Length: 391
Image 1 (cartoon, helix red, strand yellow):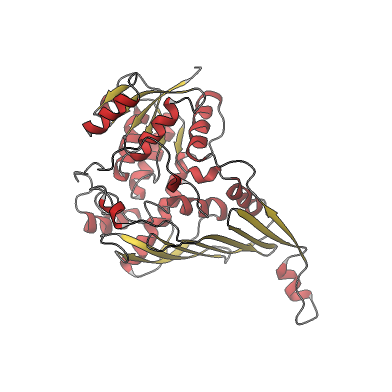
Image 2: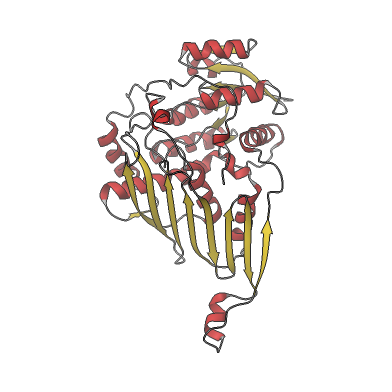
């Protein structure tokens, strides 16, 4: 195979942006051959933008057409898993938008289908392509930061207006979207939290429903998590603050990392703080350290970087930056946060999938039979700066 033939399922804002990127030749050896959407107006626009591409109103018809080697799924959240499973069962490679799904039970089924298929399975965690987050992961996972102590992420620059939430029938509803800021905007940050720092063993959370907007889901959340080694994590996010903050701080017994304002600062201790604490004989001395600053090593490749990596994985066996299997980790964090808020209690990880599903049903009704309205936003066909990392 010299190139990968891909079909896009969902031609909303992000799906149309992916389509334009691929159709314009922005991804080497990736060919856009099919587009699917249930909205005939969007499909008509797709036909005008890419007249040579086959158009479908049913994803079943697209994945059964024989035209594609892979699919990119860009539909409302509840549909990610069932469409991915159906595609994998048709022996197609799958790249899904985030989040992997709405509840961990459906994502477990998706992951199992991927394992059985043996196909390349990726997820659009595009912020993993940023070199500063990659550097933070390297410093933590290599042990250079020492034994981890604490992570604090204040990520409140996901500002959204009421008009944004009113733009689609599925937005900001339990039945259509499956949650608010934790399931829509913050999955990128929840993923990076666990990708860099690892998964906690339990957490407690407060999720504030409609605090700043007329919506039925949360637009502000606060999570406190604990780790097996005694480390802690605090995660604060909101769509109702402006100007917002994006500050990630990680400490270990050998130093501190701060990622903020487009750079990574690293204070590296010459010896373990824990050893220094109990061996130093003076009361007010401090460990010696060196200080470094890291700037991005290359331009942010974002969505295009994930698309190229996905293509290379299919054609050349390149390691995925964001394997689809990883999607369950950030979803576990958001599911646990919701469950903690609903039960006003600690939640141990992995989350009880049945309990979460039952609690979600109380808020969303019949999840499987829910008739999700298509997004009323007219597709723009280009990547928006609102999807970029903002400092």
